[in-house]
Length: 90
Image (cartoon, rainbow, N blue to C red):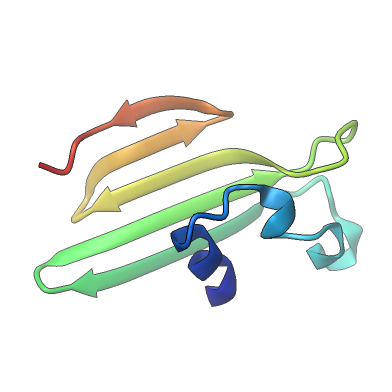
């Protein structure tokens, strides 16, 4: 799982480069894959959550939900490809 976060951090954005169809347990494509990481650096707690799904008629995964927060403050929030919250870091 850490390799996936490393690829995201290095700029990989195509889900097909992050997760393969064979990565799903018991071929349960009807359930989303959820990846979460939380790191404390200094006085800040960084949290990144990514949920992906594979709709039945699609050949690849798509982002269901993606959230980045710092110390509880949502910096980036995307659901079904639509960004609903985007705050500057400055």
